[in-house]
Image (cartoon, rainbow, N blue to C red; front, side, top):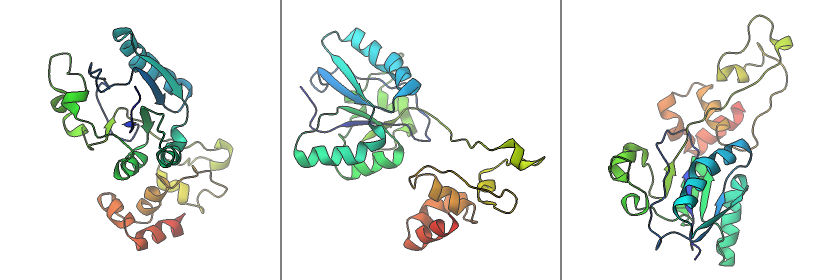
Length: 215
């Protein structure tokens, strides 16, 4: 059995507890395709999540696909072709929200589909405020760091994100990820927008232009 829609886990800037599958074989595929980012991160997920689940459910097999960075485009194409082959996908929060809004992600009934905590607490109570969407489960905390050439900064190295935008104090080229996530937020923060207003501003055409101008 394969899913007709996809379950999402998000590697967003949100903390989470244990990611667990419920022992509800009627809802789970017996052959799962799991999509992540490759490397040591995916290996840790395999060790912490998949292998324990397979040991407890010998009738289930799992294979990995390292396509999380292209998840939105690929799921849209699968949906148009009427052939969704993925079962569980790890994506960043922005992509998870987009996939949920487009109906490409399965809605999750936490208490029906996720295992109880070891002490018996239902999943909805165990995750609590971390259940921020009907379609995905936050499951890690991560950070983004910047590297710089020590021979170029002298005795006053950069210490904050806005130093990236300070071309007078730190002249030279910058390298940013080729996608709007993070870059747009940083641009607004460093252009004077209050932290708690960033997404309200970014939701407007004027805010987007403001961020792009800063970049």
